Amino acid sequence: MNTRLEESKNMNNARRNWLTACGLLGVYSWLNPLLALAKKPEAMEAIAKIVGNNSVNDGKVKLTIPPLIENGNLVALKVSVQSPMTATDYVAAIYVIAEGNPLPNIFTAYLTARSGTANISTRVRLADSQRVWAIAQMSDGSFWRDHADTMVTLSACTEMP
Amino acid sequence: MSKTSHTKITMPNMAKKGEILEIRAIAQHDMETGFRYGDDGKMIPRDIIRFFSCSYNGVEVFKMDLYPGMGANPLIVFTTVATETGTLEFKWSGDNGYEAIDQSSITVS
Amino acid sequence: MKSWLYLIVCSLPIFSVSALAVSDVPPKGRISSYELMSLENRAMQDDPNLNPAMFWVMDGQSLWNLKSGQNSVACASCHGESGKKMRGVATQFPKMVNNKLQTLEGQINQCRVGRQNAPALAYENKDLLALTAFVSSQSKGLPITVHETAQNRMDLKQGRQWFYERMGQLNLSCAQCHEDRAGLKLGGSVIPQAHPTAYPIYRLEWQTLGSLQRRLRNCMSGVRAKQFEYGSLEMAQLELFLMWRARGMLLESPGIRP
Image 1 (tube, chains in turn red, yellow, blue):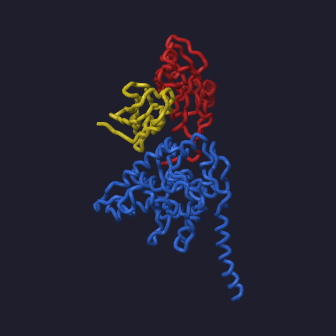
Image 2: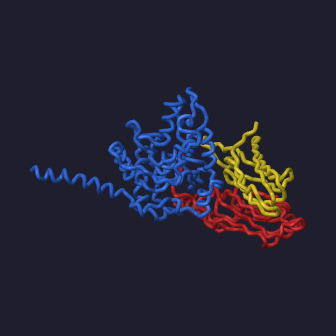
Image 3: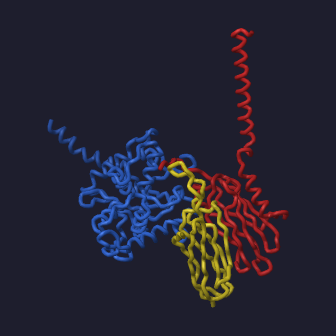
């Protein structure tokens, strides 16, 4: 039978252990943010689906987005792929994948030998500061890629309807 | 049940054969992502343009799949080679029966 | 005794003139928030083929020519089909019309109710935004011509007071950010001088077109103040002061803002 003092000491220890465990968990998740960013694996999965067993080369593709974005709702994005764009050597498709959006795919453009260039410009949504990928599939089946990192700032005055 | 909206095509109307035409196609559409909440706390359902295509005298020369990551009032800038005089037809289609068609003529010398 | 009274009365105009000077940004120093935007966003505003606001202008043009209301007349019936007669109109608002301070939206509604016998449109209603965008775009590139007059003096004074009065839980006045600290940073953004040169704007934040009053309500909620109601006299007075403060600056409507 513990005295009251001993009992309260036990309770304190139990409380301390519990708080320590919580603290450690907090520190761990701070140190391991990948657990929180579930979207990057989805992006990698989307790219794997596009590419299959093929290897992806760096080069030929240039993805341009502003490095600092005032508002992520409408961001100018440009993809240019070097290619002669002839009947036998052209860019067949361009895939754009975002690592930090709720869904990884943003658009897929299908070009033909009649496209003239493999330059696509559009305006996309970027949910947060992140890395965006552009993957080009050539008519010969090879894959090429580029990526761009960007920071999205949020407006200082929050809006209420 | 189809909704339509304004669309705008910007491209040259005259070109030399073999010249590369830059085409800007923009459609009026909110592109509701399906990730936003309304004032009632309920998620607003996804309602976007899913598909865009360009045909040159009936031959498809460009197409694009659009996903919720595209911005509102989507703008698509792409190129095609001026091969012959004729008409380019642009089609958009999407959720809830959305459809839009626009055309532009080209004279190729 | 009469001499000091005389002195005070004579110096009163000086006080009111200097009050005017305190609240006025010198013409050379007036900067539109266009200058603070990225090059991509500026390009979006400048090129009508890239500017999403142009869709509202197109809608506005259709509405302009549509016979509406019980009288079945279109705006075009009185003001011409092209809308070109509206050139220079948007730069004058808000202004006194029949002894009432009227904003551009208010004037459009006045025409609807009075001439077309059609119901007034609520602020931020798609059709009202379209009409406002159409009318404002006719004055693109023209200088704002809102001046102090004998008729608007009282409202202008009240508008100035709203600008300088602290409000909300954050207890901030418009002037504390947009005059004292314009050019400095709040969060990641540069604080603009807040000249309403581009309204109605396609705000990327809203992903749609919106009026100046919507933006002002955002500012007020930003400092956790009770927002002025749409179409209220306070709103019109504040709009009047802001346009007066921006007089001489060129209208950019319809604009893009982040």
